[in-house]
Image 1: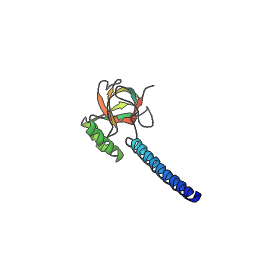
Image 2: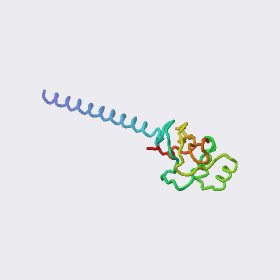
Image 3: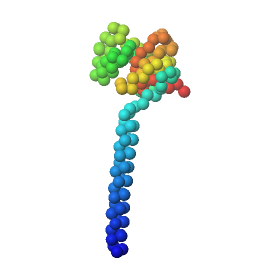
Image 4: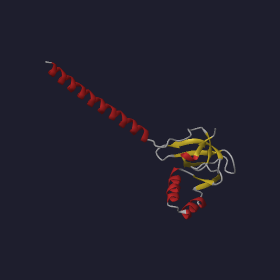
Length: 142
């Protein structure tokens, strides 16, 4: 009789262990899906004061902004292709403009699907203008 009870206990524990393992895998799968849904969260939220700089945080260079979402997507494509002539053409057509590194701005919109932010320039010669940049280029002012 004890053998039957021991076999039933082993069967119960194996089943419980299997179910627990499946539930744990499911929880890990769901949490990894949620964290990869938006892999690089914007640094700044709408209304936040920011300083514009490249990913390296370097203030010595100029920052290129697109006038709207479509031109910003095109600028990103041209930059990846290292097509300086295409970028220059967009600047000449006033589809994009430059500001100095570390120019103060305010985030006025965030497009999560394209990982870009619209910012209002708050200083320098382009004060008052708005443009779109990759949202990791909008560094939160401490």
